[in-house]
Length: 288
Image (cartoon, rainbow, N blue to C red):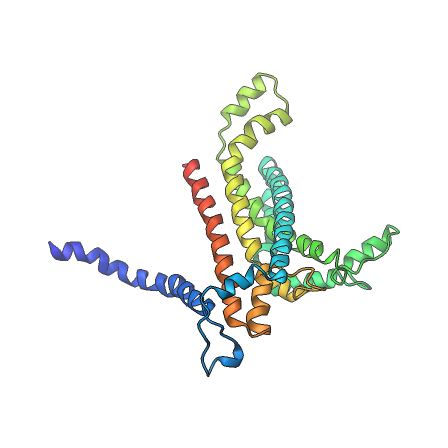
């Protein structure tokens, strides 16, 4: 009897150890480091305990507050663009199943490419002299733009690249949700004389609302944590115009050598992600 009770726990033990080693332990270690004034210069001599000083310093740091502002613009721009374009493509593929298989493969390519390839591809396309985008601008009689070197344009250049990269996920996610909608409401609406727009507005959108909410939360979390593409394309420049919170965390820890301060930024980012995760699970609960 005792063996029957303990066997499930024994079988779960390796998984629990694995989860602890890759999730809880790194979190606890980061929190421990954030409570110390750890720098690359005192790794061997030992870092003094400072308590919550790094966190108090964080919210008085104008660069950190600026990075939150940049992240907000980056997330909102990417989220709106990915959702709008992803929904449009999902509707096209759903209502035109014939060529959908071929175009679905093409549309998914940006999603499966590595951040390194995407970053350098967009650097080339944004090139002032030879880039594809500026060549198109010259073709229609417009002046070329220093996309990645202009303080006002650099962030939006990253937003465009991120929309291109993330739209396939939204497209596939919403297309799958569209397939779960039964045909009966549309047939009834057609009998009542509803137009295509009315069917979309009063049937499709309301039934897609849970899937849309989940998608927006996931896109928000992934975009807020995005780091690799920004590192390749701008490294947070010019003049901190693209310095997101994730980028500032990297610079603080690995370029400035402020390991304790960088860990404090990591913990704050984890808390923000935790809030978004709670919203995600609440949305799933309502859908269920």
